[in-house]
Image 1 (tube, rainbow, N blue to C red):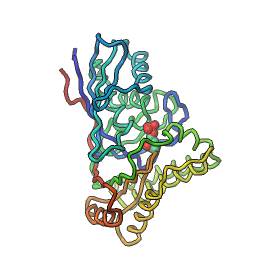
Image 2 (cartoon, rainbow, N blue to C red):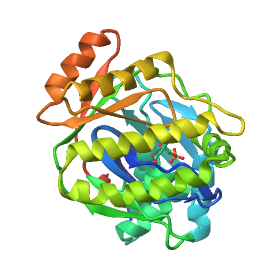
Image 3 (cartoon, protein in one colour):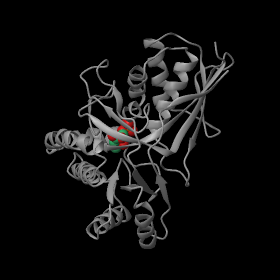
Image 4 (cartoon, rainbow, N blue to C red):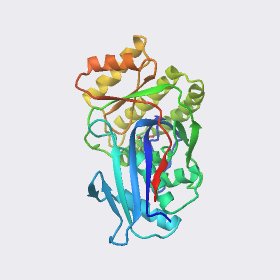
Amino acid sequence: MYDRVTARAYTNIALIKYWGKENPVLNLPTTTSLSMTLDAFYTETSVSFDQGILADSLVLDGSEVDNRRVHTFLQMLRENIADFPHVLIESHNQVPTAAGLASSASSFAALTVAMAGLLELTAMPEELSRLARCGSGSASRSIYGNFAIWHKGEDDFSSYAESFLDEDIGLTMLVAHVSEETKKISSTDGMQRAQASAGYARWVAESEKALEEIKPAIIAQDIEKIGLIAEENALSMHALNRTAEPPFDYFTDTTRALVDFAADCYHKGFLAFATLDAGPNVKIITSRKEEEAVLARFKAAFPDIPFDICHAGPRAEVRDAH
Ligand code: PMV
């Protein structure tokens, strides 16, 4: 039996987004989503049983924090797997610039893999993915490296991610750090509001179509097609938010300017497509071949914005157990 297990998981960015819950307790989604894991941002988490503490405790980057989702997640493990003593979780987010991309995806994937190690579970990746999903939907995909697909399924058992293509196809994401503030509207609230939009059913139908179109584009390593489909999927998700009940918008003026600049670069012959999650930061999809040229253009146009270059990242795994 181990005293302390440390696991690392990398964040992922969806090319086809998860933006709606069929079941908010189990995080069952309304659509199947597909992502690329990034190599630049990760969470490293150590877990140990601690008889000396009165409750589960989370220390994030050196400070103790009270996180309801983490408590709920540990309770879920106790109910589903086995009862266990209080756990001390020590977590560190590795984000190259300031902050802001610290993601629930890498956090819950790292916590899941670390806890599976501590509990000595011999779990298949699909099982780890299912557990991670209960912490945060997008975490189900961070179990895998490269490209992962999260099948929406219809119940706890059938909703999990698996590897779609475990290969680096030369896709680059340039992350533009627009703002490091915590988001005004959590993804859970955002999804709930978006689902109340009159246009939601149409977005779901379009997303299903886009998923079927992006699959062969990934296999064919067609970055242009991947970028066009992913950009459309992300922008339509944000358009949906503007017609939500009540409406909201994660865009700032700088976000809009970056999205427009990506379109401008594309029209000038570069591979540059925007995708965005539940916040104002923009990820620009390009190719490894063109990343330097595209980054230089963005840096010249937005000299005050920090950018990071990301490539496909590895799967989540245990780094140390003793
Ligand atoms: O896993 P959550 O609850 O943080 O939701 C993530 C939602 C998006 O990042 C906007 C899209 C996605 O598929 O990752």
